[in-house]
Length: 377
Image 1: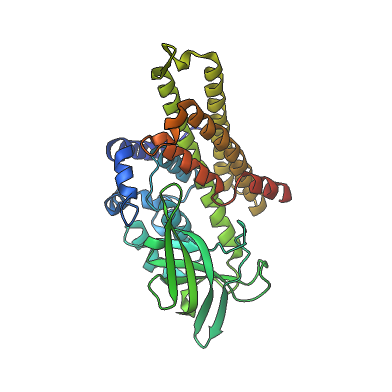
Image 2: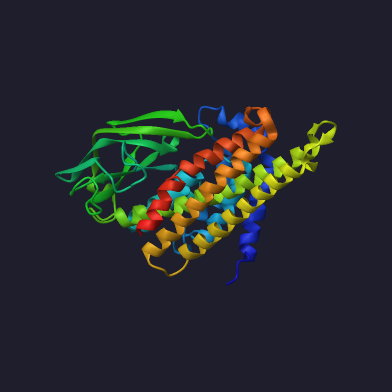
């Protein structure tokens, strides 16, 4: 089995590395997250010009290829720079759902806009009490003539405050946790009855709670067949989970590198603390955890790109997310402890990296949840 990157993947990796080094230093990022939008529209346009927004899409849809390994390569570099642009929510999640479920008319209308950076989507699927289960849906979809009326509430919708279109999961039929009966609808964020309550997450990202009150959309706004969106929604969340795990690997790499660098300059008793054997052992443990996390994420990405069945792919994703979650806890905590009090201040990037990996641990299910999910599959 060949674990080396292709020439195209190496070029993709280098382009992200170059962008982060030249245009996305810690202070630039800090200025971006303090803006009302919480991301840079200029950077988003540049993402489109560089072709990064095409990566989640297949060549048939005009994209780069839709390969999970390609996505992993990008997200790992995003993690190193702590990029706050809504790539995961808009391109990976929203774009992939449109590509996988949309009809020709929907795809031709939306996908080019997403790849050109002119349209930002957000996927509203999580609900109060659903606890990482996307099939736990109370939001209702009632047919009225040629329209569908949506009522319900969604929580912690990534990128909702900046989205023009929300992709909303709603139940056409069945019980609250049934797989059958779930549909996805394209809803304009400015539509009557849509209320978005924005908030900033612990790591500086923009998210929001969405309330739908008698929101009327045409039946043509449904993605795919009525009541048949569960499998596609679960698959997209698994892909997003892999992307989050890859981003965490990149962020942990940065935490390790910055901790090692700090240990060489911080002195105690007149000696650099990096010469203390006890701290060397702890940093060696951090390195091991980073490598374990990277290896299992690479494995999961290759399985997603393979021909295995849905259950095998889901198990691979859950095994990766569980392992990465455990690594996050050790690497993040050790980085903060070795830095001391300065490690949790806003003036040092280590504190922001720690917040980001903590958020990534919880995103789409924490380590304990995915361990249980792996055991049940």
